[in-house]
Amino acid sequence: MRATWAIPVAALVLLLDSSDGTAGQPGKSADQPSKYVPSVGEIMNKIDLSRSKLWYSVKLRNWALAGYQLDQVKTGFDDVSRHHPDKSNFDFANVQKIANLIEEAIVARSDEQFQQSFALMTTECNDCHRAVGKPFLHVGAPKVPSPYSDKMLEPGAFR
Ligand code: HEC
Image (cartoon, rainbow, N blue to C red; front, side, top):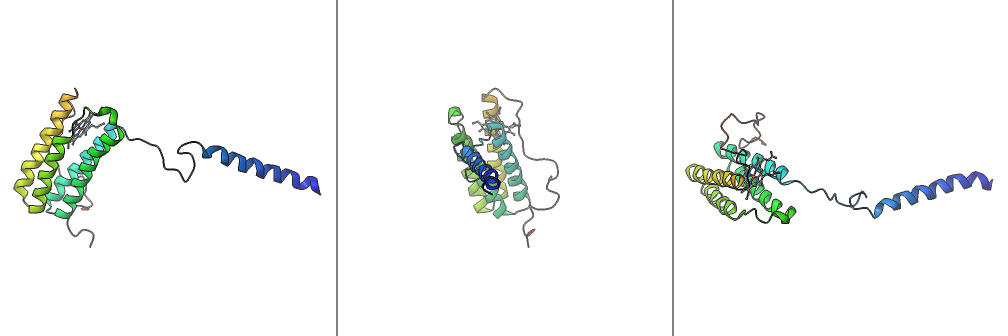
């Protein structure tokens, strides 16, 4: 009778042991956040996508969404600085100042002011890409019809 219990108990002890073994490894345990760090390129792609949604939401005069997308762009630049402090030579001060101009345009609901400040930002994006030796990373204002054909950017789409 004692021998029949010995094997399951030993197996249980082994199981508990192995789950303890992973606890010390960062990011391995279920209750620990991942230590994944997005690359500069990944964050830039996210910035670019939010910037494009920003442009389309203003085109559709969805000012609330435009404000949200602008925040996403600004957060993206903060994320590069936060995750890549070694790249402190990337200066986002100018682009953040221009983001404030865009914010003013959104608050004023001025299409003209928006187009002007958006063009300034585009120049700033390309100036930095040139400065880091990657002039081929050239961005412009979106020109083709919105890729968001489900109309998610239209004001009132959620109603
Ligand atoms: C101060 C510097 C700086 C500014 C400002 C900047 N970028 Fe970048 N961007 C970079 C660097 C550096 C890379 C290259 C990252 C790499 O090689 O992994 C990059 C890469 C990119 C890429 C290519 C990502 C890929 O891997 O395909 C896009 C798209 C991009 N940026 C968009 C933008 C947009 C849009 C703006 C402006 C709203 C902007 N960037 C402003 C520094 C900057």
